[in-house]
Image (cartoon, rainbow, N blue to C red):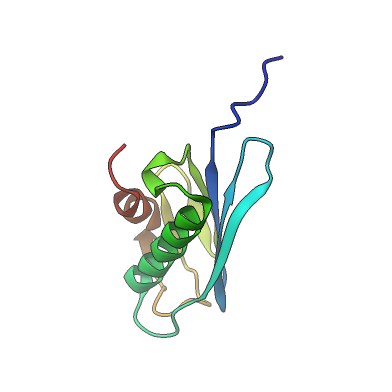
Length: 114
């Protein structure tokens, strides 16, 4: 079995009705940086996605990397998630989120070019 690449960092975002937490993890699954932001209480899915991207960017900066350097980002979200499309649907406890919204593409765009 090969050793994990100690330079590999990944991001995680926990999206909740009251808070957004973004964490940067190393190859050994140890948290290198974490930030919490309040979940927007007005607006809609685009505002929530922007707050998620801001939290991820801040956590990455605290870990000393750019979001474009992350190996990947996982998201935990209320509602129905289609991981193939990167969408979240019916996240009723979030503002204005009755339908489906493409969170994945928004986060990928906010992370910058690879």
